[in-house]
Length: 460
Image 1 (cartoon, one colour):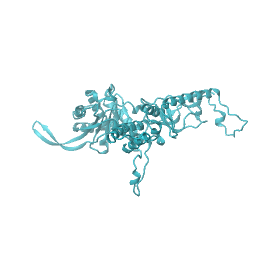
Image 2: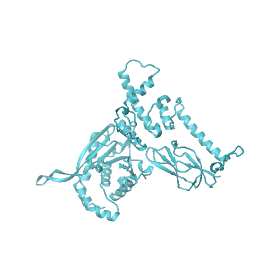
Image 3: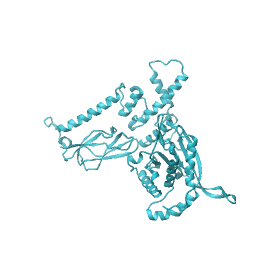
Image 4: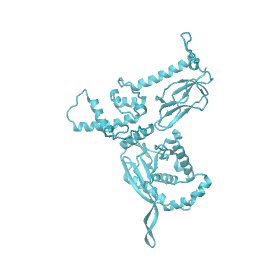
């Protein structure tokens, strides 16, 4: 029997592990090449792992809910199509019927198990394990070890992952709040703390001050008859964690600019029918917004950065993410890579294609990675402006509001006049650690200038 491992493929930058959601094939099933084998979830997107071999599934190395690392074997396939007799046999096994497992498979599995066990032991070595029943990934255990979090303290951290599992974001949020609470406690309580209870006191104080994202506050006492409790799904939990983390990480400042986009609106009205007939798809305002933002980033490249401790990383590529609302109400941000190198037609095709796949939950992990700036269209919901939350590790995000007809004062050679114009607001939220008000304000003003100066003779 030719046993071949099925490895967890690379799923985009910064993704090093995934959680097994459910197996699509059982041990003993025949699997065709490229047929989905197992469904997994990362902190970005759900995905299916296809089989790289055709044959019989002989071994599942992980169960539902387990965490598996990228590049690690997740299953074994008998490429010759011969399943082990112990897997497929429906006859009862007696003492005289020994189960035969090929020696090569035993050796392979033994090596893998030893490697995994060694990695886990190395990660948790500085931590004294308690009697808790929760599983912690090697990444979480490594962070806890480096930050001096004891196992008992780790057990008290509320988990927002699958089945209450503690995620990397949970630990980082806890550390941020633990530091601030420790400083406040020292300032307000000069008396010495009893040595036997510092950890419990600290955890209790921290949990009372962390904003709740997963039933951490005692809201049950305020429930009235008829109130409904709805459990967050996995994606909503991840969004909640990411938003809280972003607000804790970056001091947000928002600048607003009102833009006169009358020329742009009239141009689109003029070309949209012929474009639809020629290309078979609609031209919306979104690709035009992306075009203006990419040009403004070239004018102000320090908007296209990220922060690593006390270092600023200036990004070479201009990869613009666009927030898309899915059918279930959750939000996902596909990324248009190298947006500055595309013309308006290319941006329109990319926007339409990614938006459709995003709403149908068919994006690949790579299509939601690598963004350097984000735009969200709050105007699609009838909102005139918003104060968006920065999509970490980026340092800025722009919200484009609804375009409305309004009376506006125009300066002409014959004097000022009042006219009906198409107006909209642009809201620019930025990380005040590295983007000052001057830069943040000039950037959003520049985007508005590009939109206001739109050439009515532009061809697409």
